[in-house]
Length: 137
Figure 1 (cartoon, one colour):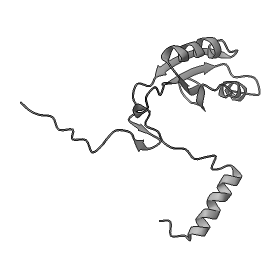
Figure 2 (cartoon, helix red, strand yellow; figure 1 turned 135 degrees about the vertical axis):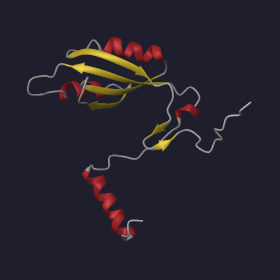
Figure 3 (cartoon, helix red, strand yellow; figure 1 turned 60 degrees about the horizontal axis):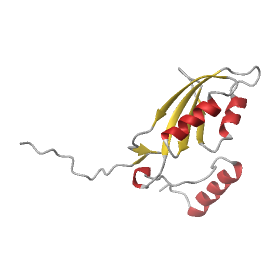
Figure 4 (spheres, helix red, strand yellow; figure 1 turned 180 degrees about the horizontal axis):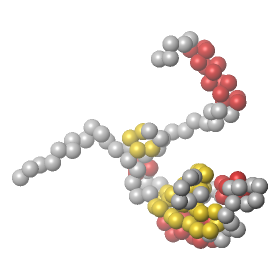
């Protein structure tokens, strides 16, 4: 597809892996099809940045929690965005109350629970071949 020899492409991929450009590979899972898959939430945090450290130290503290799947520095109405996994809504709520909201430097939190995924990492998770025509009576 790229018009390059396969061994050249394989060497480039290996170099990217060794240099840390490619950090891993993962499957895109349709969690709607997995029984007892749990709950995911997006959590917005307003943070007081630390002198000469900015947001990095608090982000490192947050990413150490097993519940936290992703941490992003954002521009806009809030500073950090997290994706968090839990067994139940109550479990995530408890994590936010006991760990995040109580952390020094966290000014406020806003939690948004994911109800349904339609597309993830560029992969549609709904059956696009399904006949969506409505019956007119």
